[in-house]
Length: 347
Figure (cartoon, rainbow, N blue to C red):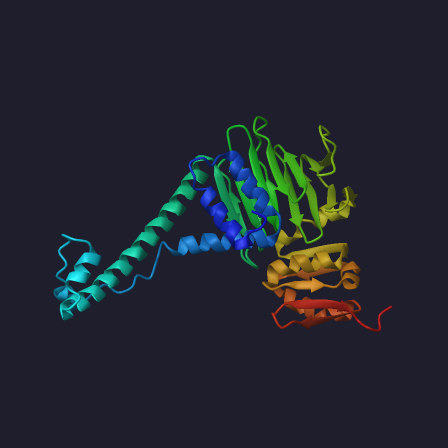
């Protein structure tokens, strides 16, 4: 698929998931493709939306009574033969136009049926394999009660895929942030994947946050095991107790964080975000999910550290005041995004 555009790749995945040969391995490959970048997921969601729109199509108007009255095609010969036989008559011309309208309407109905079949097959496959997908829009929060008893709270602009089987519970946080309260079931491990980080838990509560530069995991109850792409094969990884937190940077290793980071990790559940010595780029990555528009920082500004509290109901005001707290400027770009840069007179 590497030589195809993202939209073409997404369309191929939509078709592959409908095939009778699609199995768990197909789904896993699809999930890996989605997790490559936000652009991959956006391309697939665009294809999904197009298919869903076919469920409620705008059908072109059918021939009126006058057009039907002029149509004397009886179906005893092909349309092409009938058109040739009647080529010299006005009735044939009128009827041909009528037939084309009918053909256009039939084509639309066929597309609708195909789209509905594709959506139904996909939905049936997901239902049969215990697969569900949840997401939130910018500024939206959603609580999800899973069939096995666990609860997940999705923060703004987040996406979560869930696969439940008799043997295991596997969830993938593709973007954003989520708080998990896990129902105890030692026979069915509860696993959350986020980037190159994997969390395993049984009967516990923890928070997972994905930013542009790292994944942060914090435990509020019980204990969990965290592994990363750098964890040696067969190793159990790091064990975290309540009140502990770790971060994983894509080009680094799991690193323990101060206890205060675990304490403030879930303040977003109450409508605010608290940070302690947080890289500004990660703060802005969080705000992306609330403002609904991209907020980026250049390298120097992104390396700055921020400590403080942000009221999520008024995050725009915090952005406007940012140049007062830090030596940066905030400029709106032509595409509506915001760019944060170091002030030219800053050291």
